[in-house]
Length: 305
Image (cartoon, rainbow, N blue to C red):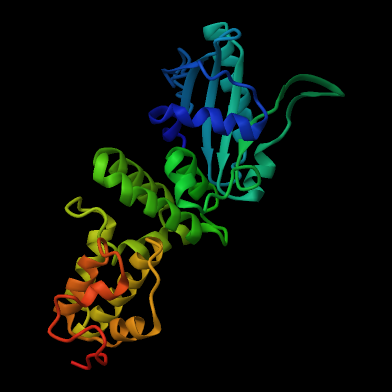
């Protein structure tokens, strides 16, 4: 989860916005080595370290950690990271922890004290980005305007009820981006595929991509799931799955589907025909146009082949 800050630093401005940390629009962002190992044989590494150069103040370091759960002793490592980076670079240091669930986020917020007998030698206050403060982005146009934030939103809400709506918005945005910038579209899809893993959102991503061919030829989980279904399922089951895909594509493209069209799509068990409809669903202007090249007229009754 932390790598998106290295590879897409434009995400810092909106994330800092939800955290209430001011950041000038002209700030520069440079990756710093994540190695905080001492001379003794004890290796420590921060997930991501960035040097932020605001145009209206002094530079500072941002240490970023991705945290999937509470880990005993982690707070001591965080205090060490902050102290070591400050001593090494002679710059102020902020710590940002990115979490996927509320319990972890609540714990990660601290503060964490180092002291005894009523005296505090050091206190660590991490900034925390998680389900409570990262926005739920379910509008495709909003997702398209800020894909890094939308993707981070999907990760933060991966275990929440909104995950499906977020993913639909992102996939719609990525479908449009694929035409003009396939490399960026592929980056964000693969980032989601890896980071969502076995979460409910990851399962939903697999379900959606198993019948929506947005990224052909990439060897992704979408293709794997689709090809496995083709090899293992019966023709009738395959047609049913692709019928759902057709309806989904039309839905995300905002094309109305009448009851008669829906019935015709779901009733057809001719896999070749449904395959053709699925391909056309990406470009047709009306749902009825799915059937223009079929022998039957659009108004005829559904096939029972």
